[in-house]
Image (cartoon, rainbow, N blue to C red):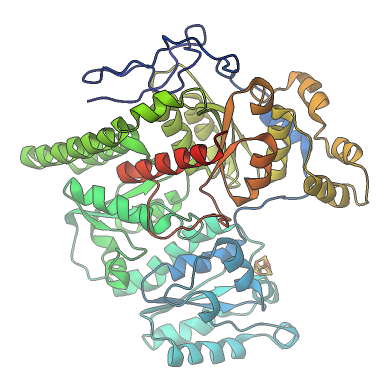
Length: 556
Ligand code: SF4
């Protein structure tokens, strides 16, 4: 079996010209260690990012969030939309739902988008309370939306006014109606956190009272992975998790999307032998809650697995938790071998392209993603594709209690133990843009400068002045300040090609620094996402296709 492996045994021995496949063991005879002279523009691998970046960022205390990529807590309306035949009902101001939809929506689903009923709370509801209006809207929803489950979600207005939403919904619950409520006032959290809250509320108010009491079913697992819609590839990703977990012999409650069994599947949550959480931190509160409620143990795989190496590691961790008998384990092993063989067979077909384009391939990587994707992509692109990490930016407002563990995982990102990646946790992606531009020796975009001068400084000022007041200084000064560097020269200065894995917000940045851009995070504007995964064995092939299609399109 041939494998693409991490490119560099060490800085000192790094082949100058071969970011991919520095070693190709076993069957492959292809040797990418260069025998050809490197062209003049080829350059050594970038230096790893220097420490203290997080300190620099913490000092900024940016008063604004530029390029946001998650929503307020009400974004969990999309969690409900992702459950087959479930309908959200909003008790919020007009416009809230549309705002969420504009950032993370993808079509209407069964009862999403403009279908979502809403109390459109205004002055009357603020002054006199909105409980009677909520009753009207719930009654109307039962009449016009044929759903299996209704979830009432509150917005800021309602939570500030203090309507007794639990009391109103409780009246319907006493009548046996399949309706639950969750307080998701936008100021309470972001939609990563409220996703967990919505799932736990459905478990408490709908699953628990209606559970089938079938006892624990060996081999049945509940999977908590992507946050629907916040992860633009959620549907395809969940289908891939289900496919590979069924491939090793498990029965899978995937709970969201087209491959799930809707509310019937949710009602069997308590029967699972164990739960599986995939991701850096989102989903852990759900698994802990289920452990408390039903004693169900859980397996936690701390990043999104891409490619054969990490997907197999994920499946092996699950297999260890199942305690298969001999024939079961043999079947699971055979499935994994088959998937790995197919994955590497596809990669093998890339070889002539990789050899031909070896001087024009991206060699350094920035990720601007949530923690689960950032770790998954950094690992995959380093260990299986050979792209070296520069600075990684985690933009999901990771709770502080999880940050140290995630930072450690970035420091161990290389499976050979030869490289580490530095990570910065940010809410304001504008700072990440500033640092990447600085790294590439490119000044702020006209748009950036305008926003910063207006918002950070409260007046219309020049670019240089605005930037220095914000504490994020121009290219020259930022690098010299306190010895801070963000990973060596950018693509503009040393000729090495750069890849940004981020969102549509990074389009101008990528154009300005001459980088390739892979759009994986919301907002997704410049690509179509339907049902393809970007995780697992199959998703990683899709990522490689997208990546090198981009490279070919921008090749000069
Ligand atoms: S922050 Fe509050 S007002 Fe704004 S969209 Fe979210 S729920 Fe509505």
